[in-house]
Length: 272
Image 1 (cartoon, helix red, strand yellow):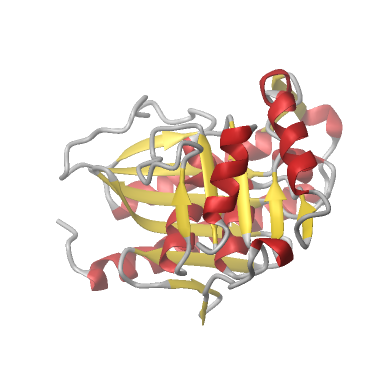
Image 2 (image 1 turned 180 degrees about the vertical axis):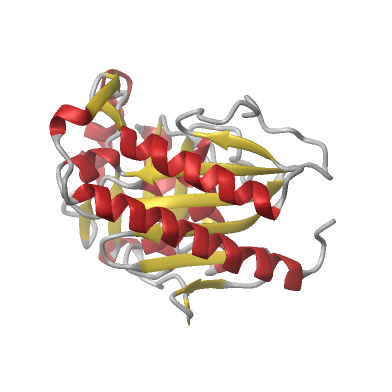
């Protein structure tokens, strides 16, 4: 049973190696990738053999670390996926996004990443996000702070007037278009600037690194945000859902900030 921070640190470093291996495979396949190899899951939501190949590789390697752990994976290539989070305190499960930012990937547009989290009951205990193009591995374990390529991370300190926000555009455009339109109208011209980068996992890591001051998105999966959320929290930031609840692990919305601007985002989202 894993209970000591040293155990989590060891697992984190093993997961970093797995994420880098998957990233190497993705990078190699990108060199000869063709749009003809893309499948459509839903409107504007894509998947390819690269996503599936990466996922199979990651799952196989993670089984070697913890054979008893379950899985929540984006592409569902493992037969023992758990459909919902198990609330038993002693139960471990991995949450895997084998290629976050698939639309970016198929267009050769950075960033795109591998995201892997380990959860125990209702807690995220390990988070690893590997950004493939920049060769940056962001990682954290519970109680061990947050890091990128061995360098410690900490969120920024900007107030809302100077903040750099990331307001992502999820695939569910019909439901979210009225909200994002109002959010943009609310913040555009009243903050430092606004970005959309196409990868939830990387947006979270950029908040942890102080490159962004806040990130918000709805209609996303657990695999999109689980690893990055821990990295933000261990870097001194705050993560909630759109309702402002600190327990966000079963939802489809995430706000991650430097803490300073969190209430500003919550208030704006409530109004919108």
